[in-house]
Length: 241
Image (cartoon, rainbow, N blue to C red; front, side, top):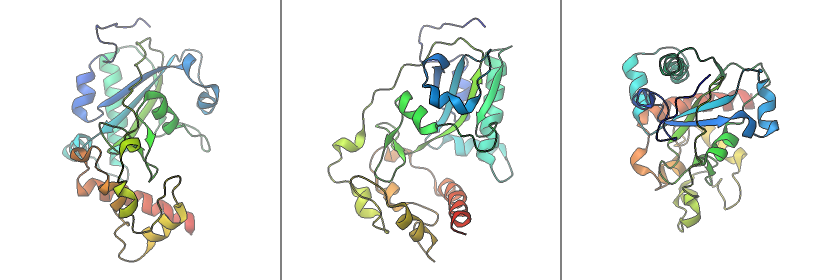
């Protein structure tokens, strides 16, 4: 399929539609440039040439989901997938796209989202093991990945550097009630135990994440934090039985 080569290779066709919908981080990967082990779970088809990764950063996506009145257990996923499909149909008529995240892969197969984030220049590991970058801090998340038959310009890597490297105080470490953070690793078991304690401040929030000064102006609203934390807390309860 012919590409629509614009003057700025960082911009997608009808990118404003995605930005306004809250999917305001986008990266186009050529499949031939991705590591084989990252592609292996995807069962790439002969016509598929690119992977388009969409993410949200900041507060807009949550506001749009609420405005749209999306119901069900996974409103962000449902809204994001619907938006991505609408964008593809409008921006690139005739293009074929296959969603591989947040669903679309057979059980047991998983897309390496953090690996993709690293390759895009978005993901650096914070002490509390959430991806962080210099502009948005930790206030972004991967929302949709789809394989397409498009020939868009590949997106340049964002080279903003690792903000934690210049953070001398590391306030996130001191703010963790579970004392689960260290310079090298997260004590995941201590984190989970703390989250399960009655009345824990970590149950539906993360004091360490809130203490991080990077991108503080983009912090999620309390209702979005509660929504996302409730899903992860339920997963911890299932995991620990």
